Length: 265
Image (tube, rainbow, N blue to C red; front, top):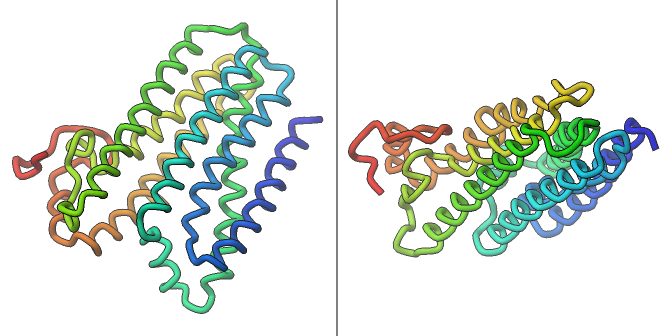
């Protein structure tokens, strides 16, 4: 099977899965399931690419498959647990109101767009999997170290926020504990950092530059489109001035020390 066929196959499978999930959310009323499916889809397609990229070093392909599947399971299981324990994602509820009677038609298009992006975000993994250099290179070891740091950092940030949210005493308050003291979105930062591991795995591969698409696109999405803007708009609606003060004192993305002494743990 050619790699072009593999890409089309992965995209087609995700399109079918997303169509089914759109029908499911139409009946259940929670579009947040698309976030669970996106992560699992990238992991599944990435694993498929590692299996089919026969020209790449076999050991590197195996390591890549393990890492991308582990990342996708960790991320998607966290989102699924959050959806189960907490009310529906406010971002999607806001879209439902804004779109009105056209909401379900637009959600269908949105789900299909996520199928397309699942395939595109798996492309850096495909590029890395075609790397013919013997494993391990120094860049491979750096990639593994970066992957561990990023995925563990994101898991810690998610855990800190989850523990803050489930405490009734924190209702209406802003989480400034741990990593959230240094960044308003440390989970997004570490998610973005994780995507730099695949270009490192790809160093020496044909079309290596394409692997950089992952972190660049992820940064744009997280800071400009589906990440920070709608998340902070929802935070202001639910927390008001407390979140506005947090915005004025704390870095939005890259971890750094707060600009005000008012930003306390």
